Amino acid sequence: MQEYILIIINVALINNFILAKFLGLCPLLGTSRRIDSAIGMSLATLFVLTLASALSYTLQHYVLIPYNLEYLNALIFILLIAIIVQLTEITIHKINPLIHNMLGIYLPLITTNCAVLAVTLINSRTTQSFIEALLTGFGAAVGFAVVLIIFASLREKLEYADIPKPFRGAGIAMITAGIMSIAFMGFSGLDSS
Image: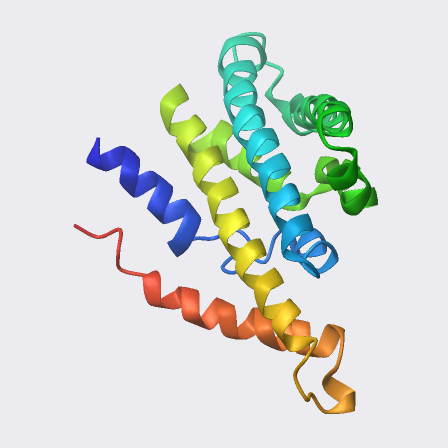
């Protein structure tokens, strides 16, 4: 059980795909202007990334490897992610059209989110079991959600701050992301026993 918790902590906090590997910056900058859209994007990504991790591991180990088709994994995983995202988008549109409208173009862009593809590709090559792949995907999604929601709350506060004109907008967003990245470096060492 402790091993499973360490997998989630490692992927979510220590080796966060956004702040440590700089993957998934487009949705971070695009959907982090408001907390409600950040929460919606976080939930959608949580679902997509966890399901994609589980299904990609299964496809890799039960279809691609046995039939010597590993060279197709990137293409297959992109198609798999696209299908999951499409189903997620349809579901969100039916359940909460307001969130669907707030997320706008960023919801279908989960398909091309490099963090989602990176997690599925890394899982297919490095994880030893289905549970490990599932937890890695879930942990990565939790890490994405934590960063996105914290970043959105900071950006909402920065709207009312007196920021020098050259730093407004993307400039202060990048500076804030850099400071968050440094802060998350403080989690390194948590995974050592």
